[in-house]
Amino acid sequence: MVLAAAPALADESDASVLMSFVAGDYALVGRGPDGGPSYAGTATIAEEGDHLSLERRVGGRTLRAVGRVEVPSPPGEGQVLRFRWQDGPGITMTCLVAGDLDNYARLTCLWGADGKDLKEPGLEAMFSTATWPERAGSPD
Image 1 (cartoon, helix red, strand yellow):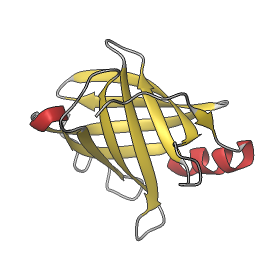
Image 2 (cartoon, helix red, strand yellow):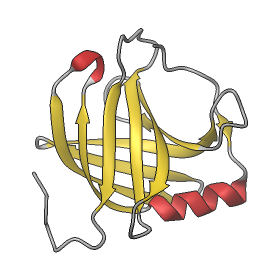
Image 3 (cartoon, one colour):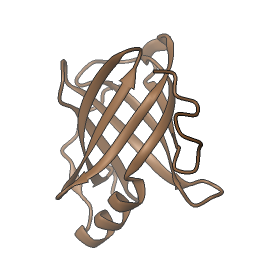
């Protein structure tokens, strides 16, 4: 699997609604590409003008990414959040957004190094911690 394509940005009004919906704090769980190790951590997504910032904290390491609402190829399949890492090698993470039972965002994502042919993408799920007691579930 190769993660590379020219992004098609979503309609500005739809993108704004989705960006405000996902802004917040999350607990995350995942697995690295090609059957890599499992991991858990925390994340914060914030609106920054026309894009999102993602700060992930896993195992004492913090990574930052810039995200935008995009229309995947082929078009007509809805919208996704696509995050691109700012630290280290080029990595892209594509996320579907859904609401949980309390109407908070839940993200399910596939990720991998740009231009690298993967047998299996990395997997990650983010769960909103908006209603959790302070620091509940934080592995950091």
